[in-house]
Length: 268
Image (cartoon, rainbow, N blue to C red):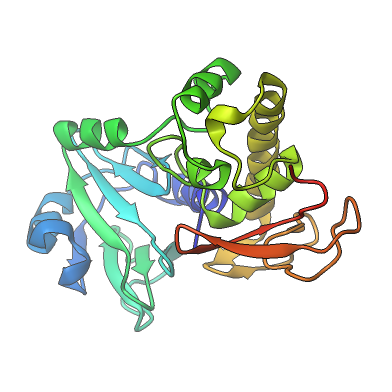
């Protein structure tokens, strides 16, 4: 599933391609992907609108217009891609945003799990309120993490993947962050010392920054990378393999119905 680094890579690609372009027609090919049955409303609203910028909030992509934004959540298999001729599109296409020279943007999603939604000012405010700070923003300080950790009885893994606590981190990068910080995934956040929280804060930023750089160059589609040498997953999906730090064996447990990978030798 695309997480913050992959969604950010898509955002940067879309910012270069779509910013300043005017949509002459929008076609929702799978109406059920539109929240609240708003497919027709999205088609009518988007036609004739200019995309002023493309932003990301957590795992959501936002195509901004002057007075609203189209929220696109990729979910498990969604992707937003430039298309040189929108008359020819893959069968997995769920949304077409057509520009004036027949090129445009396609929202493709083989499993049709993604969602699109038209948000006006009130909706954008509600989205922002529902999400925690962006971990790569200047607002995500060590003091903010210490305050949130002290008020949370969640395990470290579930805290990191709680979008109301920190926005955009998913299962894969939570495991990699905790490994980098040397923190056991089941440790309660309100039991972590200041030193451990300092390590965690640094690991969050450094891991995600490296992953964004990697994804921008190599990310092709959900689960597809051109190459992976520049960002090697050290624990995720590597159960039974040797730890790259202490030579112990990587283990797997289940937290919140999701797999967690960690090294019991060096994560305490």
